[in-house]
Length: 429
Ligand code: NAD
Image (cartoon, rainbow, N blue to C red):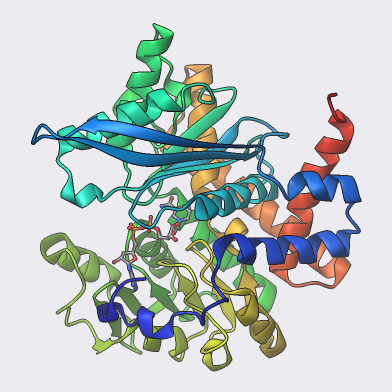
């Protein structure tokens, strides 16, 4: 958790509320129980399919050899190749990578794309490493997980502190071993080498789509409806910009340096221009300075947490005034907070649905690579809209039919889909 500048640290979930694997499993268990999931399938789905732990020796620029620890977890591949990002961070643990890999399994299933779930990570401090060191680390990590990688088996993507350059190195390393260019082995690549148009904006665009659907469901208008967005990075800034363009009033935004509040509306384009020059929102004069903690409790209609996990907890859930929460970030709400929000009647679009736009366009990138035929950006966006609206509607109908909230419905629907494939495939003995 970041230091006090963020204001989020103050809000951090009480100990015991945040173990990532347990938090995910709590939701999984609840959904499995409601589904009366077959005991055998339950046992299968509670375990990752494969966990790789690897030591990665890297010759550093100063001539010394450092050995990093890397992970790649394939949680479930029953519905198709494993899909999930790779993060470079000091906080990476096997527990967290496993939880995120499970998350990816449910996320791909909820939007019904033919992928399983995976995640990877390397314990390192990327900002203290040179580009050359990062490249060597990436290539050696790729070589050490080569046996699982491949367009048909495991397809990584960028995650925390990795980017399209890292994906380019992974694709190149894999291709060198295969002796031919294999673009479909990673997604989130530069467009010049097979990346998809629209991928960079896809997650924020997906958040926009589900916010519109949620407003429709709640009988609320778009025009003038107030939204607060935590996190002004790839997801949050795109969602804010697109929803402002649709007529919503963006009353609060924030980044790690704190937030800005303006009940009359913040000009998102001005904020974007400001961070282009100043990197962070600190000092932006488009409203009053607030903390990230204040932002979550601000007077607004829609709240989009698009920064960190575990920010909505039992400590602050009771104070949230928004009627709709669209989880752009992964895991922003703890299981304890879920119960409080449900009691208050807040309509929560859960992370595995709300931020699935990114993985959906990753799927489109993989399809385009395999077709060798590239789509126009408006085609990508239109197909993304179709997938997100269909998934939103299916989760909504499921939640109504089973009288459960949207999160439980999303888990039930996705677990049901994965379980159905396991039943059809049977157990290879
Ligand atoms: P990003 O790095 O582009 O942006 C993160 C934003 O959060 C930045 O504005 C940063 O300043 C802010 N932030 C960092 N620490 C903070 C703190 N302590 N308090 C408040 N704000 C803080 O990241 P992103 O790609 O926008 O991802 C944001 C979230 O969305 C993450 O949870 C990520 O896992 C999730 N997500 C991203 C994608 C994607 O395609 N980028 C897809 C699915 C889920």
